[in-house]
Length: 352
Ligand code: AMP
Ligand code: MG
Image 1 (cartoon, rainbow, N blue to C red):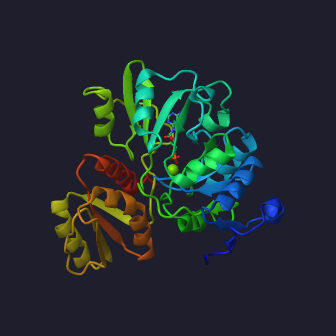
Image 2: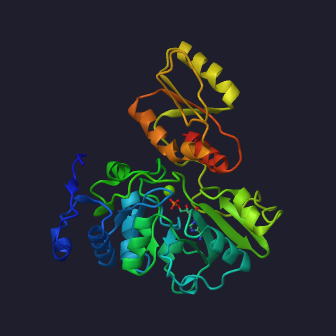
């Protein structure tokens, strides 16, 4: 792997015993997901280092959730405000009662149905959970990732891993090990390369308020699937405004300007922008032909492909030096809801 300064090649053969001594300041190692690499990653995490890890949603920047210094390193590397809570990733053997004071029946049903997988449950925190992880709140966000390398790592590591997405705060989330290095190279000690992320958008975050089940952030598990498990009407209050730290209007943003529209409007809008001399790209679920577009990406009509490739496309828009990326919003169902949420945040420009 050749990258900017601070990133060295595959280090999977490195002898475990030398791992700590060999970590040079400002150097990022990229390793495959072999058992040996997983043991290396686990030993670094146990020693308080931060490690880029693959999950099925996006790559995470992981730290020992029980080590405040390690957690502080995550915030520092990301440039993330410290009041933004992190999601704690758990292995399949983990005991939920070590992390949550109580688990509402609705939460148990969702965990049974969707764990391991792209679903995060916000529960009342156990008193032992660090303030640094929860942003000082009374709740903790928990998830069991499905990616086999993440599961192997969690088993060997033995504890919980606090991990936000492995990107600079506010920018596009990483879906390959390369993206992690490009964003954080030098600031992270090791990246485990588990291949491109299957789901490609972050987890669905669900909170429990009395009898109510509320989706704080749409994601890899659709609201339809959640309602299917809990029964119709269970998400009736989902649109109520709720305190969801970190859910900023502007997030996941590429440098390229995004124009969001319906699929019917995308062609004419792109053509109009091209006629004014701009370098224009088009992104859509199904193919849209636009004469003079610099690039036209589509997902072959597959929503899962749209989600999986979304962040790569936003990144490519920057690489292509587009002036504008015209995006035809997919339907607001299934994964489409999460895609639309991310696109809205990516397109939002804070008033300057
Ligand atoms: P990221 O890992 O970058 O996808 O961000 C994690 C997100 O999880 C945060 O920005 C919050 O929106 C959400 N989150 C984490 N902990 C909590 C919590 N205790 N209550 C509500 N939302 C949370
Ligand atoms: Mg993030």
